[in-house]
Amino acid sequence: MRQRNVFSVALLFLLSLAGGSGLFAQDEAAEVPEEEQGPAGPKITIHGYLTQAYARSDGAEIQGIPEDGTADYRTAALQIRADMTEQDTFAIQLSHERFGESDIQVFQDDLALDWIFFEHQFGESSVKVGRVPIPFGIYNEVRDVGTLLPFYRPSTNFYGEGAYTSETVDGIVLSHGFDLSGGWRLDGDAHFGNWEFINRSGGFEERQVRDSLGVELWLETPVPGLRIGTGGMRYHVQEPDGNDWDTWHVSLEEELGRFAAHAEYKSIDFGQGTYTGWYAHLGFRATDKITVNAQYDDSDLNIDFFREGDFDDDLALGVNYAFRPNLVLKLEHHWNEGYTPEDPPQNFFAPPVETRYWIASLSASF
Image 1 (cartoon, rainbow, N blue to C red):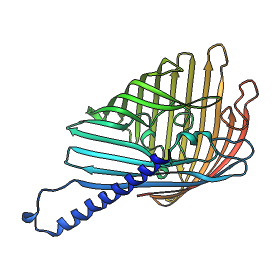
Image 2 (image 1 turned 180 degrees about the vertical axis):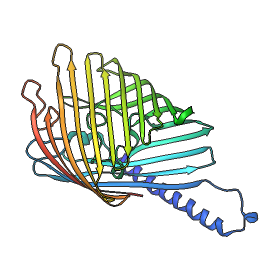
Image 3 (image 1 turned 120 degrees about the horizontal axis):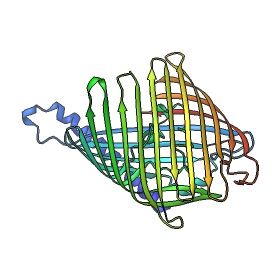
Image 4 (image 1 turned 90 degrees about the horizontal axis):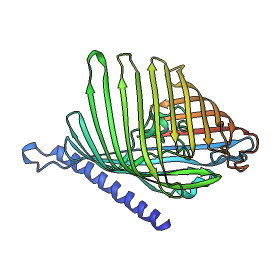
């Protein structure tokens, strides 16, 4: 793992130099008369984000948050995009994430390769190949960008680690947009490839997914800020599971004036049972800088001949203060009841664990 981390740091350094060189070359080219300039090179842009948090619980360790608190809780990424032509783009994103005291951390390198893909656009269509973000729900492509999220992370039951999800697919994503009459628009994506996810069965284990085939649709409505999404995937989870799984979801997003509302529901049939997760979020922008957020997050886990019913219930209240759009301070309080804490160990034969936890975080992006 250390060798991979050293390689990743070196790659990040070289890409940063390349990005800086590309930007510098463009600045110099701008000072040269157009008729004396040679062939134009790619336009390189660099974006990044960092969210640093401090979190603590009132007893149980949940999502890596212990009773005595932790500051080893953060997400960060650097994204480099090279626009080679108006139609062709190459993108790479490197990330760093810490989960406090969670055992999930053993599956994470200090520096990881999130995305690396080539995209070609033609008209209202595009194709991406490589390690590509999966079009899935409202937040999947920005699930770690703190300045865009109402809380430290989006719904753990819909997007979180151990919720049978993945941010990316090693394969291909095809996209097309349809302009409909009367202010309606339909955007569709189809994707195919392989990915991995973290499964929890007592402890955490990584599972390999092969031959994943999925579709995602988003309908933009004439109502300002209102759009509706749905999608589904079928994929094979390799041994020790060895089953074909089916996932589908529906999403609703509305942003109107000072109010924002988001709700999503997903269902997974994993061959030996079902998992369902959903959440509803309401945000109110009290002032230009202060936003109040409330969210209820819920999931059920049904395993054949073993158990059925509630798996996790989480109620969250938070206040965000935006010093500016790309610098946001968040304070949030969660009331949780379920079987997601890591300590005490998961025990479906015992009553659900009740936990309260707090997160204070500062998010910056550029």
